[in-house]
Image (cartoon, rainbow, N blue to C red; front, side):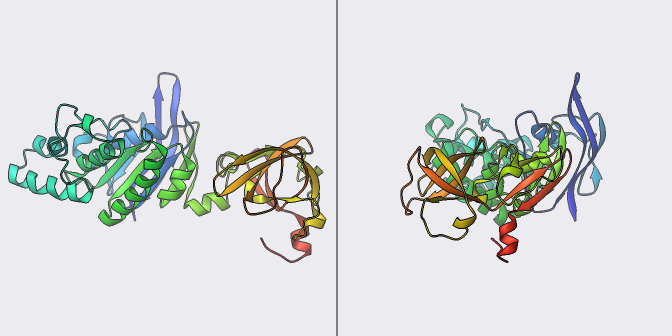
Length: 353
């Protein structure tokens, strides 16, 4: 059952239409990502749910009740800001206790709750430190605890990992996922990082130019993009021209174009005896990028540069080398539709990849 609902929400900032007929539904206990490029309207949605912005039209419901005119402080919401927003002259203890003191909770209850949260975020022993004495990861955990202190029913997070270095960011993704699952709190976070959304969220809502393009589980969006925007935005897709020039593909219509992801492509050295090598076509290696456990091999074929992933344990390929390329599938898009087009050889050989 839906716990947070937005019905036909519109929001303008002067002449800029930030939210256009937004309708979304979020179930209780789910961790949902609002994913989209800068300026797509995702943060505006988050701020309207929090009561920090008011919609021009439409309704916002929390637990079945319309909250458009309910102050943010009375909506049962905890908010974690991108820049932590910790009070720099307060200790960790006082930062976490802040919301409870505003609500005039007895000091013994505050002490009990802060101690509980310090254990939850693995920051025991840091209660007397100030924000300047914490690492980025520790600051984000304290911000998380401060938002949780008053026992909110909804947790909102605005790009919670944006200010943290890459290694810590990966660790905090896993930690956040575990904490929210443990607490079973309805949570919505904003991100422009699709890897972050796919790894952490139960459901993703993709926004673009103030509209919701598609919503669903990470796998649903990745495997079945419903709009041309989602097809090119999710999965490191690249646009290719004249896709009908690739072997074993035909053009679907005059006003169509195609997108290819690296996992749709295999690159072979000349003479390698591998599946589909007889149906591949020749390309030239433009660039090779080391990705740690694998290589991204960029090849030029029919005027297009397309990428494929290749294991570092396979025979070495060099820049400028002529190679064979086999394309398993691609997305063909028209103005408002998306089709997954498989290489016809797959059907002929009765093999599903």
